[in-house]
Image 1 (cartoon, protein in one colour):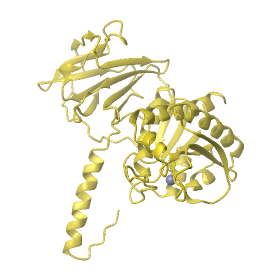
Image 2 (cartoon, helix red, strand yellow):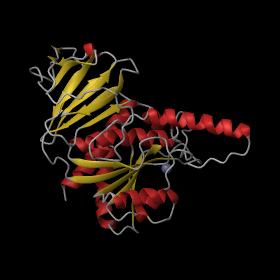
Image 3 (tube, helix red, strand yellow):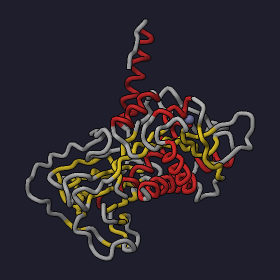
Image 4 (cartoon, helix red, strand yellow):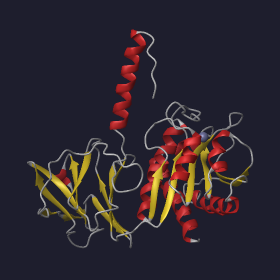
Length: 356
Ligand SMILES: [Zn+2]
């Protein structure tokens, strides 16, 4: 970022802008570690956990109203912790000596949901760290453990690896627009495209990791990114699949609606991209009454499509509804719909990868 200082007033404005940006970065909700994406220590807790001994703690209670849920497959154990109403229920995590330490506002309120756990889980416990009760999640393997904050559900998603090499494929996710480029605005100004694309991709990511994909995101915060850099990023990460998410807009009519998936005829992987597009489109419209607008064979150099024209792996650009259409805008403002959509898009990506 370059800021030119012309006078005192703009210097002060620049400082305020910097300060706001720093807050935005600090509040960045993708707290993760491991070797996916550009590992950042955003919001990590400054616990002085230095013991080489395994942590000893108290097992969590099992209850019908418990807020911890478990799902597992051969790659990962996935814990979902619902944080309740409080927006500041989680401050961050620290990893040390095979354990994840979570800084929760109310750790005593964490209990296992008896519908999800049949017995106490030895990998979860409450312990005392620096005089503060802390939730500890034990790792089975030292790599590929993740903590994500799902802001839409106000819940934590914790993935602990069950095998040494759980990640088979590499996927690059591109949330369209960002920073100074808001993309389309909803007809009623309820959102900017850049916000919704980021929400969707942040939800696609843990689904893909859980199912064995190494995931990199072209951006994780509201930052400006050049489309040339998105392409370079996907190439550098040697992605098996590239998926960009956008929201459509047609200013002459509010009649157009639905999801459409573009692939490129210029791409060197055009026929694979077509297959990927068909599978992603079919899956994306599964829930919430989305209209299926099919796939298109993008042949123009329209700017958003640059990323599918120039990447060299199978790649698609999913237009997730129209910001100009009231019914689509209602869907995109609904957190459950965004969850379903993200699950369905990741389901499509996985169906494609597993068919190879
Ligand atoms: Zn767009």
